[in-house]
Picture (cartoon, rainbow, N blue to C red):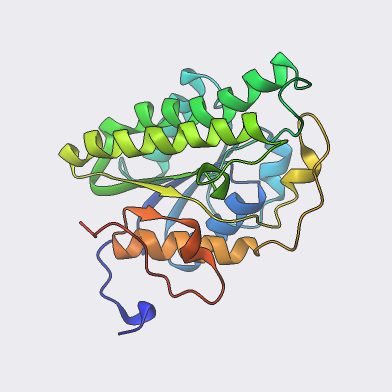
Length: 246
């Protein structure tokens, strides 16, 4: 049976979904794909002007998720727009910095961990008690969480910390019948590398299209996957993820 015809255990039609980082390359592609599948969206990003440019229908909230208060505001907005329920949270917030450890500033290091590690934790903490049984949280740690690289060591560490959090938090959330999915797509053409908070990106080969990443994430949500390793995002790979469905 092909992945497209596999039984759907978490259909997205009519689901209330909070997308954090909705104006980024992956976040906007995920929002588009969720809308295509019939989800009701609450789109959150830091800048209102960027949200206003999004063509995807949905409620919009400009909020700084680098604080617990911002995350609680995002959850409240999703509950208000989604009929007092949230069926999925997709966290596509992230920043990158390049440079060897001896040259990277303390400010950049702190921002990497605040945004890439603490935002997902804050958001999970704010959302968990409001999620419907069978709901899911998707965090995007990326392939760097599977194998770190020189010149990206601190960035990779912030993403590996997120992957570690997801592993432990998934076991806690399972008691509430909530899935926590760690998604680790390979390099994707989002433009994030050109917007690094510090340093210059090394030369990289062509990356995946954000639309491909969004398709795999949404398929994983619908199938009941519990993990999305880098291997499942390859263009030639079937959408078969590790971890058994609920």
